Image (cartoon, rainbow, N blue to C red; front, side):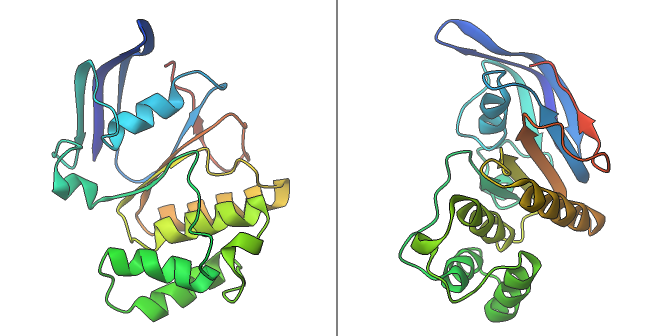
Length: 197
């Protein structure tokens, strides 16, 4: 369970997150809000890029700075960029190897198929939306319990966004927890939770 309790964060003397509290285990949690609302700041505290000024965050009972917590997370920051000189296949396989996945090739093939990617293409030749999908696929290759995704559908066309949402639902049905931020309202099949940050 990811627990966020009474979290307050100041940046440059301004309150960015004020008394944010929620708990989340599995399924999909969408943090919806306009640009500048504090969504990214909140996620950065969950994955230990920033520390809360007040309050507490726990990931399965561990502080975000604990290595045991970090191994539970698959993170895609908003400005994440792929490694350009690799093929799609090698990019996803690289991430799976980092996490020590046993059957790396089988896992990579499954993820390539899930995201409908051409494994032979080089990442630097892909469109912006396809690069975003490669990053999502690579994060999934880590086999995390929780996916923490900041604006994962930015740059995707409407159809690709719908496909991505379908993948999220499939992963959630398999027991994964997915937290992602967006300023899009999304599809009706996804329950959006608006948190006042």
